[in-house]
Length: 79
Image: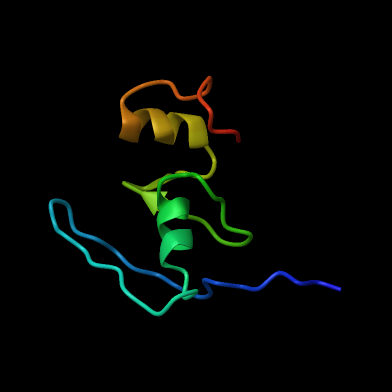
């Protein structure tokens, strides 16, 4: 049996540069999952995440280096 539950489904949005965004919802609605996907900790099971026209899931290590400013391939994070 498949016990996995889709938390995020059919979402699409754009965030303008230098803007602030709030993410809110009830417990279990996918807020943390969304953020984990945006920073590269989780990969979507379907679809893609683009930032500045770059698919961050095709180059997770490069994306993390860009947002953290250093090579994290030897860190505690596993990919």
